[in-house]
Image (cartoon, rainbow, N blue to C red; front, side, top):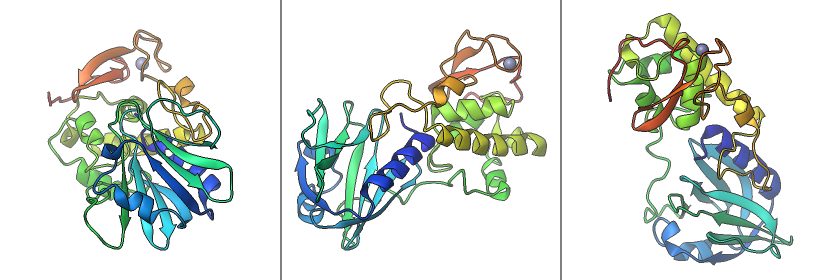
Length: 278
Ligand SMILES: [Zn+2]
């Protein structure tokens, strides 16, 4: 599932392809990927100019003029691709938006259909509020904000995965940051001392920044808009490395279930503190 570094990479690369361009014909082949009324897509998008493309949490936002927003959520397996219109259409391509005065188009491909798209314009609320309930941006939060989050009596991994608390972290980058901070994933958040909280704050930000530099992690579905893979998977410390040696102590990485998700950690570097089970 694309997390913050993958979404940031996609948004930056789409911005380079689309900013200043006008959108043209819309071809929607699965209406159920659109939240709200799908008709505004073909009515609203053609002729609008893309001002910029950016990210909030794991959502990708195209800011359009005259004022409108086209917002994508990639879910488990969603991808956004910019390619020639003549390129063969792969299965599960649900939406194609031509880019005016070019021979290219933007495609939304999503085999498992946990992703979706919102088109917001004219202040109408028929499409829901896709950005309203997202928590703090981890690269913008202050240590004080983060300290407030950690005061909760919740398992640290579950807390970091909660998009209404911190927006953008998923399974990969939670595990990576917890290993860097030397914290066990089931530690209770409110038991961290200030040294541990500081380590985790810095680890989250350094992990995300490094992953963005390497254009995200490609394990299964994630691809950049030009079809290339990300490169950060080569630097994973624990994620998807069960049985392989810890990069710090050489002990074997262990997999368990925490917060209902496969969780990877080093039992030597990340000793169990005070734990909670949910
Ligand atoms: Zn270790």
